[in-house]
Length: 68
Image (cartoon, rainbow, N blue to C red):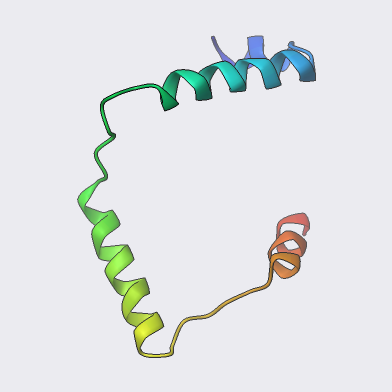
């Protein structure tokens, strides 16, 4: 299925397709493998938290930043 086909679907059809895809993924027995760089990002973020240098935003701030 390509983007053009998806764009022609109704909202309800797109939501149903997403649900079907999610159901298929949830029931897979094979766990996805995270790329090596994920571990480095997580370690850096956890270090920032432990050192008190983490930046946080509220959910409202995050939503507002996505609208801009």
